[in-house]
Image 1 (spheres, one colour):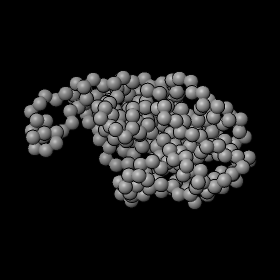
Image 2 (cartoon, one colour; image 1 turned 90 degrees about the horizontal axis):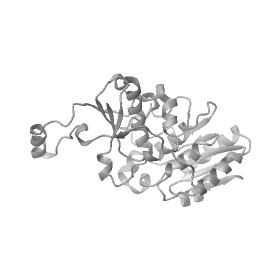
Image 3 (cartoon, one colour; image 1 turned 45 degrees about the vertical axis):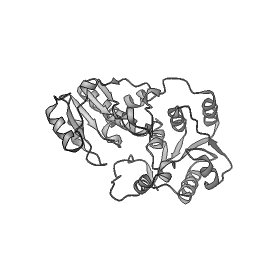
Image 4 (cartoon, one colour; image 1 turned 90 degrees about the vertical axis):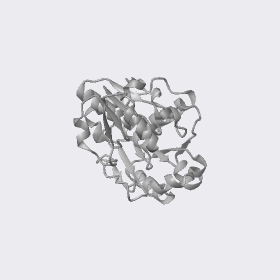
Length: 288
């Protein structure tokens, strides 16, 4: 079997799932999800159940035991019987590691795997499994109607949240500033006639106050119903995309199947120079 560890927000969970699906498809093995760490993770909830995924939760005995902390923990880890015979494949860097694709089960993937290079060979399968498993809620269905009615619907994602409030997250990620959004929107307006910008943000008040005003602009109010996968699919329904340095809007753009879509993404994905983002953005996407 292929077991992939699930941890983080929805975008990260999707990267972890997609990498696992790629290995499972290549080897003809079953894909299972290790939800051990999500059970105690307080920042984000498990969100993959919104999609038509084909995987089940791994049983405790199938998941490799994590090394204990401290001297006593290490001693216990050595004395206790191993829970699983899985090869543990840990991500070493943000950049693509081609050797991961050669692994065959049983494998336990531990990482974020934030590049489509891990699942490009099964892109159609990934898109199919990341379709919503239920209809849009009424409010979001109205937004979808507006997207489909627009001449040139363009999604704009403004990611703030813990990127602003958490000093550690801010030091690693940083945020896209108003001037960056203004230039990205200007370039999209030059490319498409009569654009309508659909703005998605976890801080809509900041977005309203800081984004430039355009003749046709719709702010999509965030909901607290745990169905943010629907917002992602509203982004994917647009013609083009302005994404933040966020895996959430990365997937909103990637799930758009149009071959002619245009995506503008921040050239500086990480504020921290210790993180290499060279493989995160697909080659066809514009870096600004």
